[in-house]
Image (cartoon, rainbow, N blue to C red; front, side, top):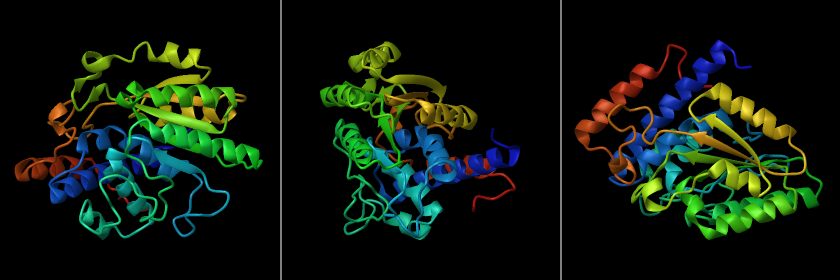
Length: 283
């Protein structure tokens, strides 16, 4: 169970990540702030309270693997990695610049700590399944964690990967679905509905856990449960809010792929500054 100090620390980190997202995308004049902010609490918990990773040794043999399937949400991942120490926070200003290591989608050939280049929706899970299979074949204890978008579940390749992971009993694989219920073209229910998602995933042979994706205690409990599952992969369906953390951005589809303007940036940063507690944001 998380202590009060741990919760304060995680909330401070998530606020700082969200502020970075606002600033990075505003500076780049492009990017995807909405979906980055909906998954921020999941990434915060993984990078600052769960994953066995070391920014000084990004390729260490016993590390956990993290795959960001919804690669367009890279600003959240880059911010977490920078705060964790994989690269200087100052570099976040280079998002989407020519020659930058921080491309619009994660590039494993440019930035140490990125395990897989992603962005083509539907492919991240397939790669994650392959990684988990390889680890099992080598009798390694490492685990694979991935974050998918809910709209990504409309891709056929996802369901082939779901079948494969269950068939090969990939119990070292844990996938979060960032279930913010919106995609670039509108509400998912109107574009192409994915419900009943829990029933579908169970039918495909997965252990399914439903949580509030902004509640750190629920995220921890789900991960503890997933670690104990034997003989099948686990999917954590995390109910989230697009643009979470900034009042005027929450559930607003216009921020799926558009940054704040100057006035909006100032308001957003002011709101996020107020959410950072007295404990500070550094480890």
